[in-house]
Image (tube, rainbow, N blue to C red; front, side, top):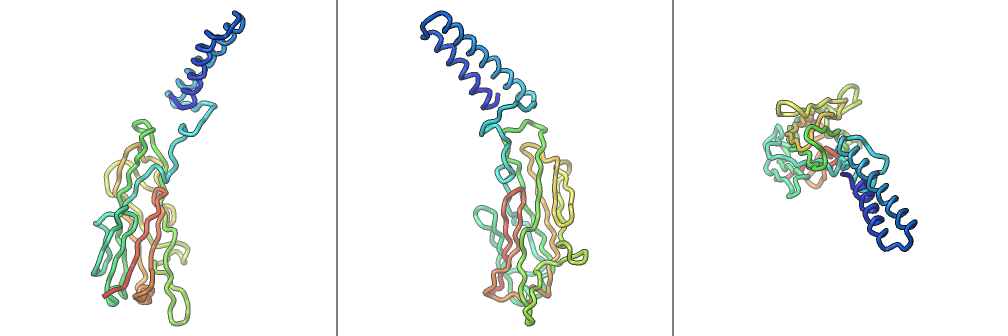
Length: 236
C-alpha cells in the first residue's frame, strides 16, 4: 500500500475512534460515516497501487527513485589504457580513476578501455520491473598547442560531431544497450540487476603529447546519473 493510501486509512480510523467521544448521536454517526469513507477510499487507493495502477494522490515517498538515487556506479580495476602506466588508482568511493604515466607513454596515448560496475539498487520496484538508464561523456580536456589552439584529448568522429566512443555490456541477457551517437541508453534495466559496462574511447595522441606534468587532464562521465572522472596525469 502506498504512503498516501496508508495516511487516508489512518485518518479514517482516527475519525471512527473520535466518534466514540463525540457527543450527540448525529455527530457520532457523521464521524463514523466519514471515517468509514476514508478507510474504503484508502483501501481502494492501496489496491490500485498494488496492481500497478497509479492513484490520484501522490506524496513524497511514493515516487520511484530518481536516476542518481537508483544506480550505483564504480570504476573497476580491469579498466586499462593502451600504454604502460606508472600508477593506477581508484578513489574509495569508486568514482575517480587516475592514471599516471611517463611523458613518453603519455605522448602515445591512443585508447582508454574502461570498465564500470552498474547496479540497480531500487528496492521499491517489483521483480521484472524495468528502469531507464543512460550514460554519456560530459567533459573532456583540450590541451593547447604552441599556436594556442585547443586540441581535444579524445578523438572526434563524423566530421567532429561526436566523440569516438563505444559503449557495450559484457553479460548475456538484459539489460541491453542502444548507442545513440556518443551516448548510451537502456530501457530494460530490471530491478536489482547489475552489469559490467565497457567504455572504449579513442584518444588523441596529438593532444596527449601536449599534456604537461602540472596539467589537470581529465574525462568526465555521467553514468546512471552518477558523476565519474578519469584523470590522466604525467609523472616520472
